[in-house]
Image 1 (tube, rainbow, N blue to C red):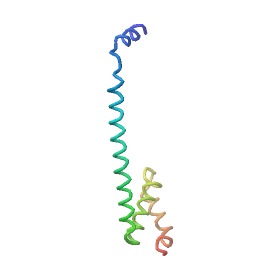
Image 2 (image 1 turned 180 degrees about the vertical axis):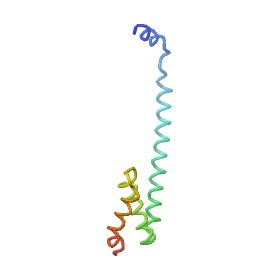
Image 3 (image 1 turned 135 degrees about the vertical axis):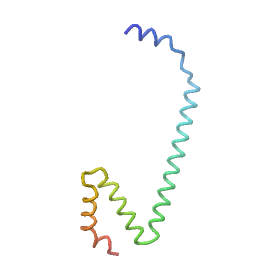
Image 4 (image 1 turned 120 degrees about the horizontal axis):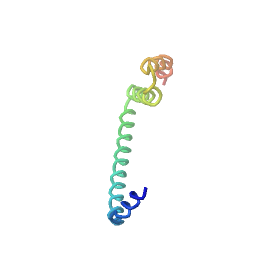
Length: 92
């Protein structure tokens, strides 16, 4: 325990300016990634809204991704859901 404490005391001092600069760069990259993701989501939604069939497919993919992915027998469960919702999905 004492050797760890002694080694920690020998560490060079932290360069606060460099650390702040690195954190600002990380934040800028994160903000840019978030902006790009939001733009892609908007594009995907606009593309899905182009017709009824693409909107239904988009909705079904969203249901599959949020409700069935990772579940045991996910494909079978999704197909059962799709069958029970078929009339609802076809209605105007």
